[in-house]
Length: 598
Image 1 (cartoon, rainbow, N blue to C red):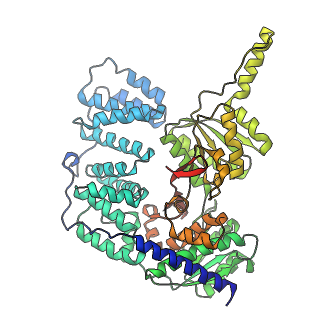
Image 2 (image 1 turned 180 degrees about the vertical axis):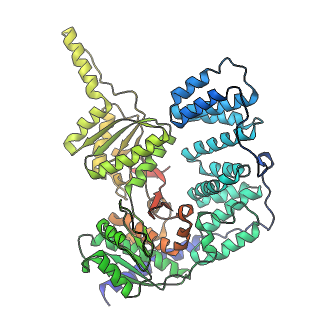
Image 3 (image 1 turned 180 degrees about the horizontal axis):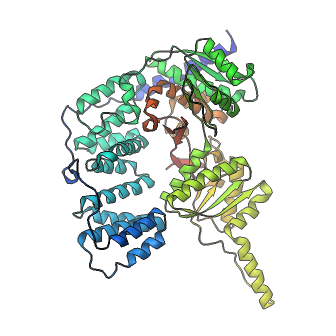
């Protein structure tokens, strides 16, 4: 028996043991609700032809000026415009709309709590439908930024009952994303207290979406029968409509990965993650596709390896891994079988031939999410600390673009080239050097020594520490406290966490990051089984391999384009127009030397 066969059998045995234990611990599932038509909430129901145009007002020009300023994220001009109405006799509609705009101003200023309270006061009033629609949608925006996803979904269901036809698809997509962000326990708890049938239908559909592929079509059919006329149906959200009558699985899948060169450890980790999911699927009776593995290092080019896979019977190719290999394959016209590439490229992909989907652990996704996380926590003016070079450039660009789009501003961006730059960079970014310069000026003016405590700049409310690795982050984070910024929230990507316990992580205490569900989930049988067979150093690549199998099994859902949404081990997966899978990750915080999910 070869070493490769021995490895596969050992891996399969470990996975089987983990899956048996998981099955023994599972409880029974509830049956779906009985068949009945869906009733819309009375308080938000409006005719399909209803006009959500704002009611007429003698102050329309003032409201328009404030609204245009807010659209440009200029809250000061918006506040100035609304101030003109302070002594005016406003109607009930005018008062409500003014308060709605005032809530948006408070949010942009960074006082989202005051904004939410103002909107909550409006929620109990008898509002004009057009104003109510805007109020409720902005409430959802605040809930989303605060990561109150279940409440956001519930409010979205209410809004959908009054939304015009043109808004229905986007609302359905956002409600489904909110529910996909919730844990199974949260969905189950919400279902226990739910009585309204529309809301129950959404919750039951969220439970069904997590089913294994062999059960998904049947469960979706049962849901459709139980909830006729439900707003989540026709079509089902997230691409689930393509799972009702799924296309046949490919007869052969070929993994094209580096297994003998410099990237061999990475290639093997991806392979093992893929096979872990493959064996898990077989253990519950899913149709076993034939799987082959090719060593891409044995071929002269990515195209040569791809063509070899196709000639040997592949109906789906997973790989390559190297970015330049993905670029080569993307430029190749007339691809004959679909491909799930395991890296992301910046150049456009040829749409000739079969689809090329790009699945990667792209850190840019995390940078954009950090911006939303910090903004939702109330930060508006931030300092960026990042390494010099192309990686740091790309990370800052992704983060800053999202940050400014939300309404935040960058106070300063500091780059460093190595450990010798850390302290000087932190001092410069925090304005400590300017404070020390003022001390020298006062000393020289008075010709005597003066008592002095340096002060950091006071206009910062967040720090983005875009470090490349844990050692870099563990060296920089204590410097922030040393230079009087210990109270500022610090945000970082998953690159600062080595994916395993390390006592040195106490230096990262209170640092907020985003990371893979694979690492943050309380129980992950596949990860546990793989950790017994492999080093934890490549566990994120194990997760990438697991999601390659997941995408393979849910490939039909991607036909839904931007509506497709799949909960994976590397994050909540959606597809952009370039067929790149974008990831949304859960947040966590270092509590001492341990990472705790938020």
